[in-house]
Length: 483
Image 1 (cartoon, rainbow, N blue to C red):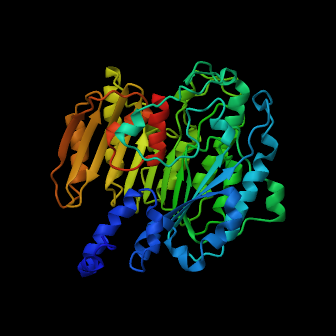
Image 2 (tube, rainbow, N blue to C red):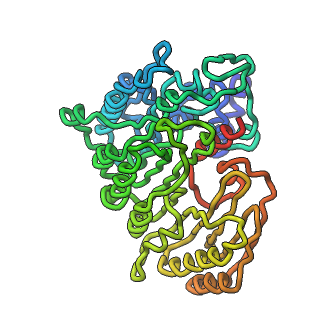
Image 3 (tube, rainbow, N blue to C red):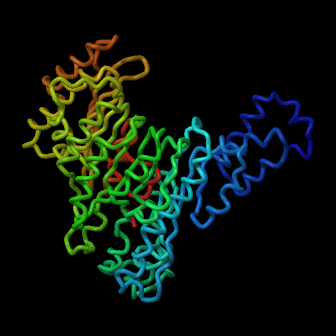
């Protein structure tokens, strides 16, 4: 347009020119980033999107400061650090400890380097730091169908369409003509799920610097090498302005997990920065690995540690937003809440409960849970959205309380099975509605007809009114389950 008739483009109002350019930045067609160099008017539009989220391999940390001059730092909203591990050596799959000795030092060195760089940045722009640990060999050997470093977002077509690589043939790692016909070796599972512990010797001689620029820390499910809880305070203590935490750990029946869970519950209750207002915690299901042998010889399962119930109950008193999936059970967490508690700031709350299943014998217990939730919400004066849900293969359901922008309250049951809103439930939530300008409570019941193939499908079709897992993680769940 500009090369043929520059006068025509210049004659358009500035607001209209901006509306034309902005969709191009979101489409991200090949070469879109170079459009920032076309002219001075275009530069701020495309640079804003170009710098917004940066995926940074640890091998390029040395170049990072020169890549982002000080005058461009305010444009960056999200830094995704991919900490790269060395590729497996020959016949590594039969050697359990081939990569594990250098795991802690490698991760510690990369985190210390990014903290050192970001410690020079000013606070106030709202910066997210996402941490990932990835080994290229993981997706080249046994685990070609898993996602370790992707940022795809959920859309129906791409998440549900599996595309097998029929040319891939590696019988030694269980693959025949694009199909996985053998479970990964025990040593391979050990490599994949081995926990990360920061190097105490490195940190003792050269501690992490304080970083005030970071306001959100993200650790997604694609980091299957869970960072042990004993190392997390090293990060949190150096992030005094942290407001949001997104953490999606994998559950394992490994022997170290028991102590790790106890320590994590203490961190949640007592050791997070006072600035934290929002937590989204999603304990990943291991249903994809149920047929595989775990590295400690015991079958993995999804479960919660009793100490988490009390820890999250106490922490909720300080938060504005809390979503915890599969780490606690709503019924147990509600039991940990004291009769005198008031939640002055809590605006959204999402919890899972194993009670929410289509067993007719549990209707009375489910009813008691929903009524108890109503009693607690009456002590949450700022509550706008509460969700109690459950989901897995072949089942999904959610109870949702929402207050819209006009202060109209509603309760909704949405699921693959019907749950009648009894007079007792309606009365409990009508009491909540009576505290709002509009006393009328809207009651809805919606049925899910789609096939639920995994817990990822359950989340997708429940259309929950708040985020319980990162969108890219949800895409991975659904895609991996299909494949």
